Length: 142
Image: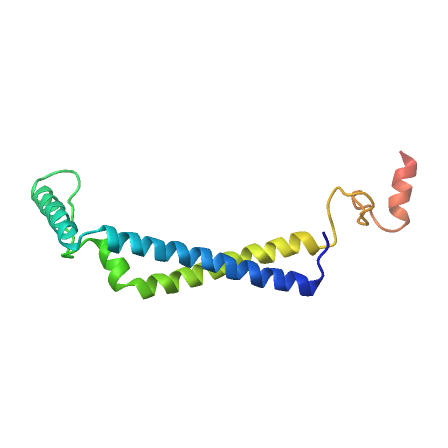
């Protein structure tokens, strides 16, 4: 299948839109799952129990001192409820960087015009020889 430049660009645009739709769809699915399946009061109670355990462990002497978290609610709930816009922006930026670099590398691999090991490639694979008559004299003396 051969692509010209115009069809390659349009294929990239369609693939990029599909990739972003999949990434954002997964993010919205994760948000829906966290917000709908987590009872805020039950999650907060479980979180407070865990924080109390960490505070109790911080009082004991041991090889590692744990710092108790300062939030009153679970981090997943805060992230998906209060900071969801930041998550969307991060997904857009990092997905764009990932897709752009992949598409650029794929385009370079497909359209470079040189395929190593293929029949009839034009580059000489022999080692470089010294220029001038000195190189041929050295070869004929051996």
